[in-house]
Image (cartoon, rainbow, N blue to C red; front, top):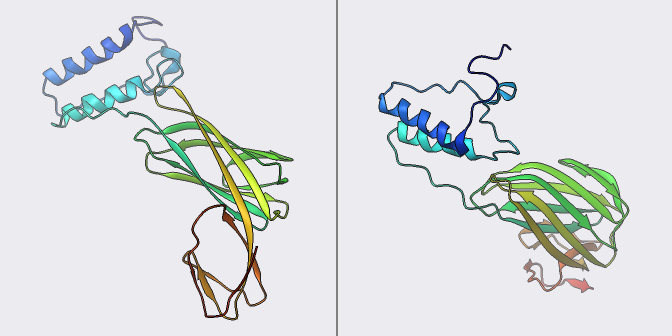
Length: 231
């Protein structure tokens, strides 16, 4: 692409130039506004999120687009906040990261460690690697109110399992944030002559089934009169 005048560099003035261009456009009461750049990196006019500017120009675009449509300025996001939930099964761990904030969580790197688990190479859902007692999962984006789920295959779990989850992620302002949580599971063997409900899930345990529960959590079992519990 040929570099157009006024040349390779136009001073953005910390975002003030982009704001003035929008304000001039709105003063003309146009039928529409066209932004002639998104990822023109070679011209230095990109408004796509970047290391240098974060989401500054995308947020400014949302603000002025809302004014153009006749509404007020949109509220800026306050931050991303991830929370982890874990479930243990016989040969794996199912983890879910939920964004409780009102900003996207970007470039999430989640590390799962446990001295009680040997992670296999099969990790369903995202780009990941596993070695011995640790597994790392890369998640590009978790929107506000959304979650990312993945399954980590493991060696058969012991009757007592401790797991640590640590995640580093970024907000649209490119501010780093960190999540640290620990989970402790204990095995319980259930035997029942008829199907039962364990925390709302149907469980067939005629020959005995081992389940892993969060230590200290409440368990809701709806079962026939005769149920054997070991653990």
